[in-house]
Length: 126
Image (cartoon, rainbow, N blue to C red; front, side, top):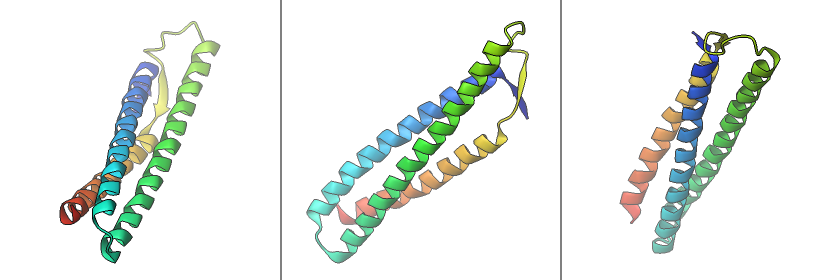
């Protein structure tokens, strides 16, 4: 599905806002994880806690990667607009962003699973 520059830019902004939300939510989960760890010193909650800590780090890294990709796409849009100032950018199709949509949707699906597992862990050990 080809999209206009305006549509692409809007989609990028939405994705960036969503990713920032996920980053903030992970920060909240990390604080909750510390609380769980402080209340439980047993081996099982500690091992599970370490696993969540590692997963949170990986998800933050993936957010950084996705943000980088989006910023690069935005730079490319800006370059195009600077090079061709004679055209109405709302009418120009910039190509298919399906690969990025798929990456974002995969991230959201994986994140939802992590969130569900962490909330179950928190209920179990708080």
